[in-house]
Image (cartoon, rainbow, N blue to C red; front, side, top):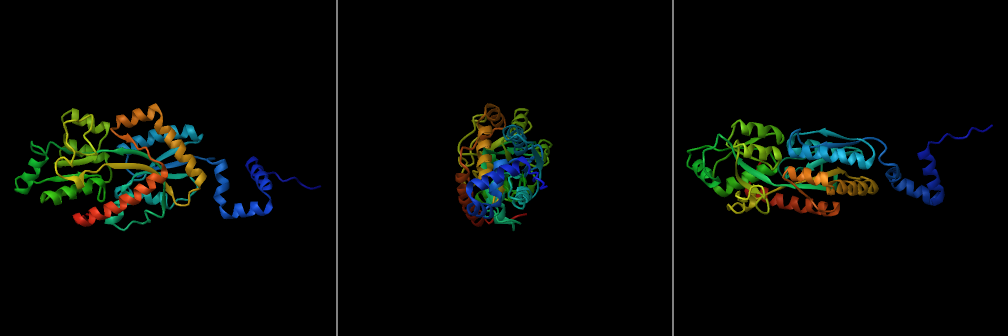
Length: 339
């Protein structure tokens, strides 16, 4: 008596699909792209969303809110794991080296792909080892004075530092970050010595800024930052953004102050490893866009002082390439080096 094969439901569906295609065509289809069969049943297990920065920052806050709502859309848990360090490069590298099965993604700024590799040798090829899945947000970068800084606007503080009356220590989220480029651009344009104080993310430097451990801090706009400004603990001097912020209309952009090369904002997006199945990639892009367009996420983004980035994955990928070319020129002209 012959034993009937005990195929799983998913296996039976796959065999039926192959039969419908016809044997030769089915073999070609299966051999050409083994991952192509998976998306029909993807996801079947939890998805890991790496956040390339420590807990407490704007990317962590938005990433956790995104994961919670994305899990509802996908029908499986989306687990957030903070993998910080090297200005986001450690988390991005982990995603680049993950299997391209759609189960490991990373939320990061574009700078680990466009800026950091201009300063240090990256353990990944930023334009070949990763693929854009979906844009998330643009976050303005605020330049803040702490209690350690004397009164006055940015130009006054720079003049005092240039005269040797008041040294300036400027903290950022790390070497090779957008804040680092802002610092070096201001330093070069103002011909002023500024000491860089690099951290490994955005949470801890905010706490140290409130404690007055340095004079200046560049950080992404966020509700926690706004709270400290309203409490009088921090003083906004300038913002990196296309225009002044509605919450702080009195704060000029860095371009208005004569530092156009420093007038930068942070773009955050979800990336995956190269070779990600087109079906899984398009499903993720659609679901992330859906989540971000919902009223709850719009409110969360607004509370974090960020703006939803309305681009397709293809447009984002093109922007990454263009931004990499721009950052290479900025780094070269400003002679920026990693600390």
